[in-house]
Image 1 (cartoon, rainbow, N blue to C red):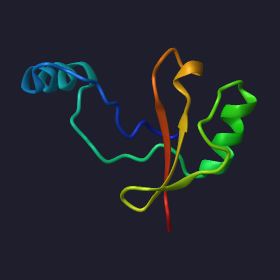
Image 2: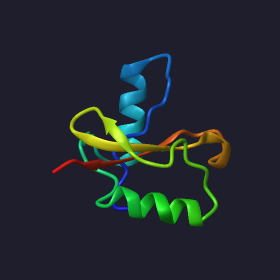
Image 3: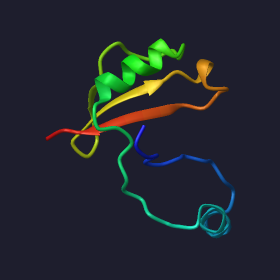
Image 4: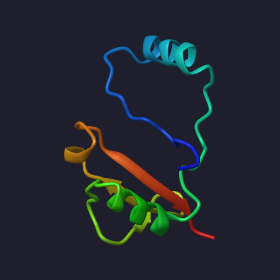
Length: 86
């Protein structure tokens, strides 16, 4: 995996949470993509024992191919893999 694009966290106070996570993470960048070859990453994840929600990536927002790692294999966290469509 190259980088994490985003982490979605439900909060009660957005301003307070933004300040906290900026302090924890040290930056406020939004756009950084997670994988260069989504199919290779999906294969790697399956071989590592993770469960994916689909066998093939699908077209998502912002001209991306996406696939999700099922929360049952990641301690309840929905992980999204995304690759820019060139």
